[in-house]
Image (cartoon, rainbow, N blue to C red; front, side, top):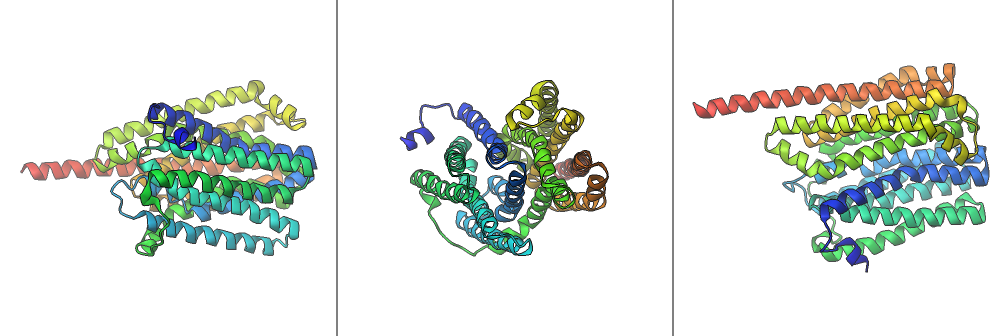
Length: 427
């Protein structure tokens, strides 16, 4: 039955790809919002604030575990690295993520329950990362629909288990443990079906090329890690400078931003292989045209979401979370606008990876990190939640502008070089 769902021979693959990518993207984007809602309703604002900061730490460490290899793997159309190399590299980075989580728990002197919750949330991301390694190959082979269905099933089932257990037991620890267990169970079932369809995806370890792969992807990883830190930097500033209940309010306002980012991925994720081929073939005009098209679509999507947020979005958030939020309308709309900027920056990040110019990622996030150090804590201490929104916007704009300049420069340079080569060949 599961095999029929994943590999339905009569289905329209293109239609399924966009449909299930949208479903999985929405599920991924609302998961943290739903968890925050349940935590607030069951445990109150203070405990919800504690849980969400642990959830945020796990999200930040995910970039360490995933090493942001997925986009590189999908765009590796000439299969420079074997699956066993990607798999071994991913296990190494995911293991480092677990160690880093323990280090965070030790430094922050978390109590036993805090350590268990954090390690379960990070363990959940570990499973997600290993699954992602298999999905990268399936995606490259043109079955992004299959990976989206698997991801959707895992999120739905594990999240349902977490929510039900949390409501019944009112215990974050028990709910987090069963979140991890259910995620592992779904992963094992879905991966077994995928392996049956793609026998080459058998578990195999190979250190051949691992160091080179990790070196090549290092700028992407640093960029992803800094990105994850930067978008959460205002949260960390609030955590150290303001009461715990303020953290909860800011996270409520911040949640819809991920909808913008995830929905933008729905627009461009299915065409990563196409973009890779355009760049590989030297079609800079087509590549640049696709970039402009996707950026326009993201901007339009963001404007629609900002309008929706202004008309009814904030009111709905207030009702759902039982919180008075009307005084934050301006801040909320600003965050939604900056969410579009962030989505655009992340899309440009993917293009830079396809172009194999990863050092620009390091430059972009490095510059944004410097900006964050200079502005975030100062803005939060001066303007509170508003300052957190301003800091987020400054960071997002800095990243997007640097990437846009880099892509325009590299596209123009390649077009010029290709033109020169053609002239030489003619003579």
